[in-house]
Each structure stands twice: as C-alpha cells, then as structure tokens.
Length: 124
Ligand code: HEC
Image (cartoon, rainbow, N blue to C red; front, top):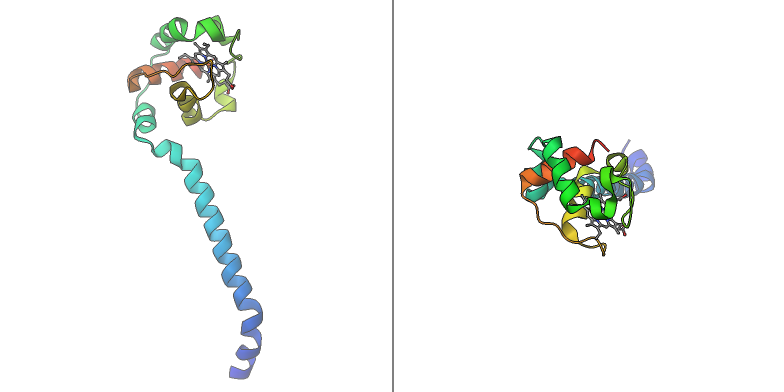
C-alpha cells in the first residue's frame, strides 16, 4: 500500500497542486478586478441611490448634450444610445469623472447628481 502511494504521488500530486493553485488564483484575481470598481466609495455611494430620470435629463442637457447631442445621438462625442449595454455602470461613472479621454472634460458630480445622470443614460 505504501509502495503504491510512493509511486503514484510524484506524478499527479504536483500537477494537481499547481494546477489547482493557478486556477484558484486566476479566478480570484479576475473576480477581484471585476468587482474592484464597484467597491470604490464614490461608485458605491452612487449605486445605492435611485436616480431621478427627469433630473438626469436636465443635467445631461446642460453638461453633455453639446458634445453628445440632444437625446445622446452623438455629435463631437460618440452616440450614447444603448451605452448601458456596452459599458458597466462603474465604467460609465469613471468615464464621466476621470477626464481621461479628452476633449471630454472631467465632471465632478454629487452622488445624487451622478445617480440621476446614470438613470437617464440607462434610458438611452
Ligand atoms: C467636450 C465634449 C464632451 C462633453 C461636454 C462630454 N463628452 Fe462624453 N465623450 C466625449 C468624447 C470625445 C468621447 C469619446 C472618448 C473616447 O472614447 O476616446 C466621450 C465619451 C463618453 C462616454 C463613453 C461612450 C462609450 O461608448 O463608451 C460616455 C458614457 C460619455 N462620454 C458620457 C458623457 C456625459 C454623461 C457627459 C456629461 C456629464 C459628457 N459625456 C460630456 C466628449 C464629450
């Protein structure tokens, strides 16, 4: 019995150990990266609020329509029709607050303003 386990162990055990570990780490890392934006305090504070679509439309017309067109059909900036199906909610929030894609400016909105804006964008 002990002879048998001595013979078999070195073949499958390292494979199982390293394979399992790699799979576990890969799963853990990708799950963390996926969830990380949602864990940000600002994003979280936006997501717990329910937005007012009408308020969101006013914010959009004032700040965004010059580039994205009335009703988000696109002008200087790309069309935002169906943007909620292309991008995650956290991704849209980052797009709006980061200013990483000039000429789109960086916007600073209160969580409630952002929730309103998001609820409007989700209807486009
Ligand atoms: C000065 C022009 C300008 C203004 C004002 C502006 N944007 Fe943009 N926006 C852009 C441009 C240009 C892009 C494309 C950036 C890129 O992807 O490189 C963009 C991209 C985006 C995207 C990503 C679209 C996608 O398909 O991934 C979102 C969402 C967005 N804008 C929302 C907004 C919102 C909401 C506002 C108002 C708060 C706003 N933008 C104001 C120019 C503008």
